[in-house]
Length: 174
Length: 101
Image (tube, rainbow over all chains, first blue to last red):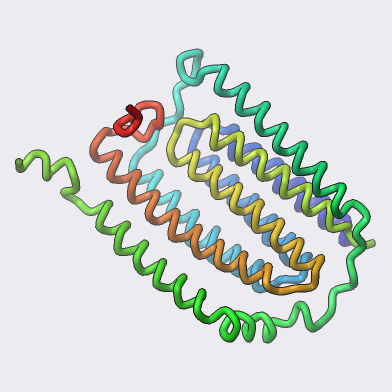
């Protein structure tokens, strides 16, 4: 049962990840990334962290990808040009080779390290949200507050950078 | 039957490689950003898998902070793209070469 769920969600994540990278339209890429992220949320759930699964759906697909879609609509981004002039084959092939070498090396390392590692059964103690919360708000309270500060700074900077009358109107007024 | 942890790790490695291909070959700035989100997601999956393997919830905390930083990064990056688009009318990274030379 768990194996079946892993195969289904893992395949969904892989296929939609390939679509994210391969599709020319940014809208389709974004919508397909939603599938990847929701599948990953299901995998988080299987790994015994319902907190992360909920956060993944709420924060990633609910907030970040909506932001992406909003900006894509706002900018009216065209599809990438096709044809030989659009992308150099050298760049594509070197990227493919580099990525395959990277993936092969990482897979080999991980397999050597954990190929036969057997999981202990999930315990109530590990999954319980109460324990996660006490860890987050007790042991990791300072990083938590700092992340809040980081988000505040990010919002202020983002609204300042993207404000109407940015660099181009300053140049015009000079 | 239980799924071995190495399968999760291999899946995460494959997702990371796909994201790396996207970040290196796409020219649309937003598509590059999406690929970077994909790579962050793969790293999160690895962290969650190790957290499960070691029975230590610290890995989940790291995933939480990565999510928050990814949100901040997306907000700032997209604002930069809006600013660049106002200036240059394009977000094609081959044509945004202001700082290249």
